Image (cartoon, rainbow, N blue to C red):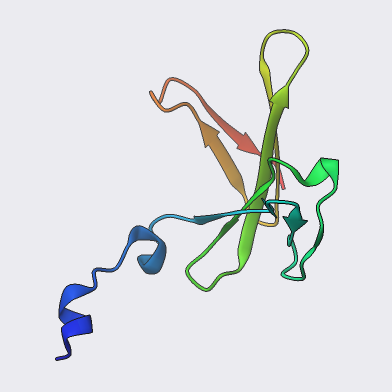
Length: 95
């Protein structure tokens, strides 16, 4: 076994236990579909979450709702469940 194989530990991203975040914007460049372009104001804050095969399963961003709260905007092509970190509430978004 190589030194690399014995020292490298798979992360939850590698095993598929957690989706990997990819920010759309880095500096002034956005690359939501892989092709870099000048970032637009609507690109900032958007994050794609990808599986272990690098396929995007959902995209989200958050913004103030104007009432002292936060509006979480989620889009995806799979069923989505949102839950509070303390498990006090769970919401299933319809397809």
